[in-house]
Length: 150
Image (cartoon, rainbow, N blue to C red; front, side, top):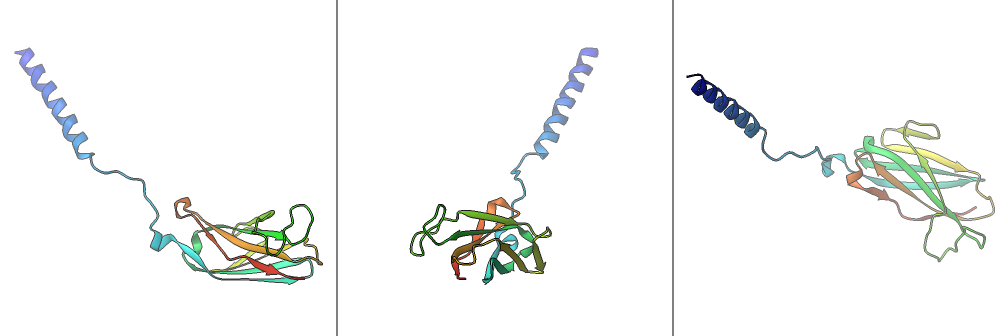
């Protein structure tokens, strides 16, 4: 009699484990960003030389709160090391990152303003801005390459 009672309890325990595990089955995925809701792009990118500084204004369209950082990439035009010519492919020798909310960058909603100083006032610089999203899966946003003349 005890054997049948133990067998019945074991069968119920196995059945309960099976039912509980079966309810947890199904497609499970990590939450993923929705491109239409979490993506941003650049509406406009403007730069202006003021002496040895380059002041950049970036206007963002879309989920501007998802801007993780903005990277200013630039290269001097010349014949020295790390410099390029105006017709050569753009290879940014210097990169400077600006994180919204930190020192060196100002933001007013979807507009970000930052500047880089210490540039040679006699040289032209080619530059671009790269924006990184807080969601790595959405990749980066890259501006066109611009030229800032002295």
